[in-house]
Image (cartoon, rainbow, N blue to C red; front, side, top):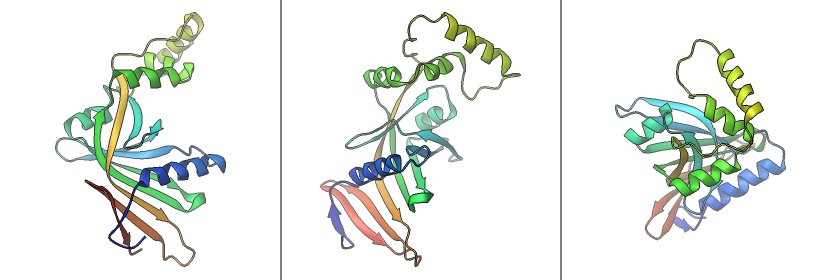
Length: 196
């Protein structure tokens, strides 16, 4: 692709990279660093798992009281960084995060393993606590008495990231790495080759 050219779908290529990582048994192939910033611009980062790659968005899930969810509400501009060292690849995405809607919240909740559902019910992720033992005891109790999977909590949901830029980076032995930057435009994606 020449600099300044147009390419239809960097997300399709990103999806192929994730699938290749999965096929090659790369640990946690859909793990991604999510970077948010609060209303004052202070950044924070954490690793999340990409739950779905849609035609026009990347989706992850979270409890809505967490710092990441609160920062997204205050400042929806985010960045994602995938890194597969064994494949010599990185993908960097910037875009706008938006709540996905209750139907997708519930669908993705049902896809979670039961142990993950129960953990989300007993733990207020990110809140200060004195000891882990009470949480473990509550989790063990709920796992023992729970007869059906718990319903999706009202304060848990899916976040869609609508990408504005996607950079796909491929390692080269001579360190002339390939860096392709895709920028969203009305008619699709503008592609620029960047110097390594």
